[in-house]
Image: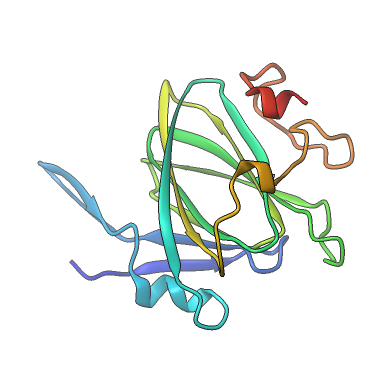
Amino acid sequence: MKIDFEISNSTIIPGLKIFTPNSFKEERGEIWTSYFSEAIEKSLPGKLKFKHDKFSTSKRKVLRGIHGDYKTWKLVSCVQGSVYQVVVDLREKSKSYLSWQSFSIGEDNHSSILIPPGCGNAFYVKSEIATYHYKLAYCGNYLDAQDQFTVSWNDERIRIDWPDEDPILSKRDKK
């Protein structure tokens, strides 16, 4: 099986990229490549490399985000289940400031979204359970939750069209 990705650029948010791998299906199941450095890391600026991975598991109706920072590139995917992925441009000098784009990602398409620094990341779980994967690239130390920005999931300036008006939220996201 050849390692290959279809790479698309967002027409809404500069720097946002969508990676969809080829997959091989047969009677035993399916196989695909989720990450291949030569295909994906060339989309990062300079000699930046991915430093660590994180996973989160969430149940149906959970909404996580809108979170981010101004130095971390995030490659996100949903390896189990299905999510409604949203990216919001929060870079004040960007032509697409406060614009958002949504994607359906999960086990049906295996797509990954490369989110540039300054963009907020959020997702809503559509399946019974979802396992979400973050691959992070940054210079220096990692900025954890206390150093990140949080924007309200229902911020009136952004007006995201969420699939649910009453999602399950964390304390952080309820503020």
